[in-house]
Image (cartoon, rainbow, N blue to C red; front, side, top):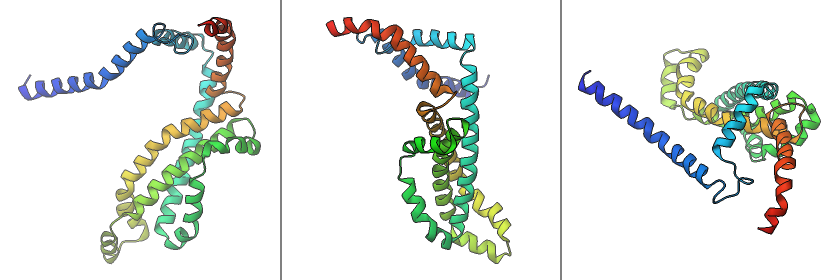
Length: 238
């Protein structure tokens, strides 16, 4: 193997080790501290958590809830991203529309979206669509704002030069605006992924018939009854 390839492989392996090292150190400290520094009733050991996860997946009890959450997540993300890209592009290309709707969108952007979960449940029920609506709303604003700023940041000299050369609106969109705004679009869609998960899970926490949020709530109550309540007298004595 040439020295350059060998050095590149060595640096690649070293980079992976350095990225994994903090996680490994954290898990080792966590494993040691649970039961010694902190009661296991408050912080379980990583090995216990891993074994419980194995039991849940091996028994198959989590799969119906996991499938429901995945459906809500995919639908909410797709709807929110599609509407966010379209709205952001239209408002960025139309100064008149932007002057009308931008203040309302920015004002609504400041509202905590999680606080709207009970309202969506009243509107759409406790089934799938209330979680889809909440996830879509959280995704929409992140994608919209990034697309809006990305299209607005396109160099006007490039746009004017393209128009002088006879480009149509479709060609401007395809060859100027979309390539220039692509980094903003990708960044907004990447940022929206965890927020869509939060929207779905919080909606399921609030009220649902199935999903990971309900699964967590159900098993949390079981754990409290089985583990925490019997241990409370000893906790108070200590």
